[in-house]
Image (tube, rainbow, N blue to C red; front, side):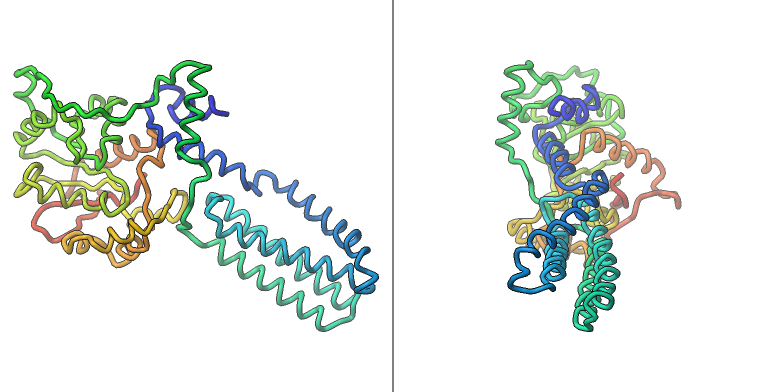
Length: 393
């Protein structure tokens, strides 16, 4: 399993990845197997039918001396009620992925139908009781309603099943036995000593610049030769790689037609990346260059509806409330509410292949910014061109 995870996240050993990307990847693999009703549907159905017979027969038989002949029906009702509560809890669980939550919601709907049909039949035919009939109708309808409502829910906050220390221990153990994993990246190195660059090279410039909000993502893109294959420079807002940062910026400022692509986490710090590029003298203060926000943005996550690893923290909520007025004006009320609830999504929750494809698609889609067919949205009223990609892949 571990070997397959390493192979899959590195696209069969062709792409570098970060330790945190591996954490997200392994966590998702474990989460997929935690609850997969779609994969084991017949098994769940078998166990449901088995215990629907066994529980009333065994437990009901024991309680018949106390509850009389109705003990079998009472136990059957309690069994279905417990199962409905369990499924409903699964639809809100932070430990289960979106697919598992939706499977639980569908099963809750199916259970509602079974309770309606079976309970009404028992209430009328066997018990001849209006109260039993009414209880079955109410319980079945509630299950159906909750299942339908939970099936359409989006953006459920998730928590890690695994910890970074667990994955680190597994990595160390794996490499002790199997040798080094060649495609896993170390922490980005801080190299303050400027590198010597050939003057013939510095006489040129770039048409494109990718700016990341973290050194880890910048290192990831550089390690996977994104700059060579897409003819662009790659830097982080923190100044990575330090050894060539100043030289690269000098080269970039020579090109008045430069396009800048921002890629970042969807959190208050990441959302402020484009604003920092516009207002920081070390970057593009008083410049008319076009800046394209590739993402992640709350707009993209809300539009996608599901499939992303959304987390939440009080610190993120507090930071969102302290965003400057200029940044807040570029966000919709829905996006601000999303951020101020403390939600965030990290870029490292996506595989290297996904990040690279999204970035390539964003660059390709920005070739003609004025086109009506462009996938970009012009935002803000700052006098400068700032575009947001409407979909993160």
